[in-house]
Amino acid sequence: MKAEETPSESAEKSPSRYRIEALAKGLDVLRLFDESVTSLKLRDISERTGIPMPTAFRVVATLEEGGYLERLADGAIRPGVAVLLLGSAALRGSSLVQLSEQPLRHLAEESGETVNLGVLVGDQVLYLARLRNSDLVTANIQVGSTLPAAYTSMGKLLLAYLSDAELAAALAAHEFGTDAGPNAATSLDELRERLAVIREQGYSLQDQEVAAGLRSVSVPVFGRDAAKPAAAINIAVSTQRHDLASLRGPILDRLRATADDISRLLRAT
Image 1 (tube, rainbow, N blue to C red):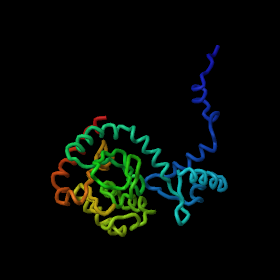
Image 2 (tube, rainbow, N blue to C red):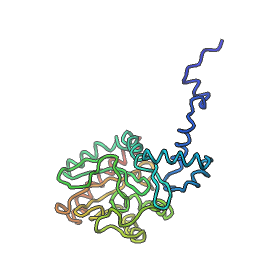
Image 3 (cartoon, rainbow, N blue to C red):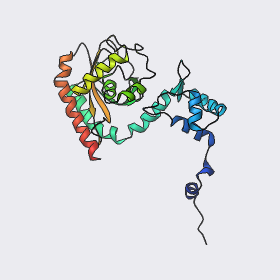
Image 4 (tube, rainbow, N blue to C red):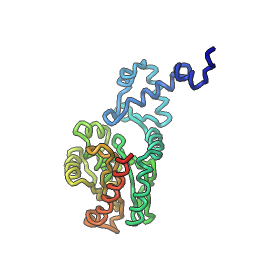
């Protein structure tokens, strides 16, 4: 006589029994977006998912209301902050964050400055770890916060490793000059010139591009893929405490040593 199936076994054999169609459609929409697809029109969403236009409209409207999608001025739709926060919660528990914690803490104690770990999400840098020096006056940045990649040292560093097509896609919706510091790039062409220098030198400086009075230096962290960074780390300082020469000197040396430690740990996993 066949043994009675447990609920979990039954679910594995017949997943549709527990399927919530509306939720499944919402997840299908969210899965459309990645590094190369950062925004879509409603018709594109309907065509790519096979969801009829009226249903796609309702799904998008529901996700938009919850902050998981947002609508741009031209009607295009892109992931909202709520999606980034969900992703950051998962990433904070990832091996990347866990393996980086001790090296970053040591760096913060040794340097006495604010230390950050971040990854690229579309045209934003998502902060996964932050050890803050209370003397540094910044915007309200914390784990899970995002800043425009085009203006930050970590963002520019990670953008520098993208192909031209990937870069154009990542910054398709970015508005240069918005929420920027006095020295920020004002066009994609100007940013491309800065990224070329960053890629060649292997580190990125931010000199009052995020906001007046703030500087930072960033280097890549590599996992098993030696051609593309898994993340970036930086040291952020006040312009009153450090000039650009000091960021290129001992601070950069400490930062690189920490990145090497984290990279070795990632490759060993």
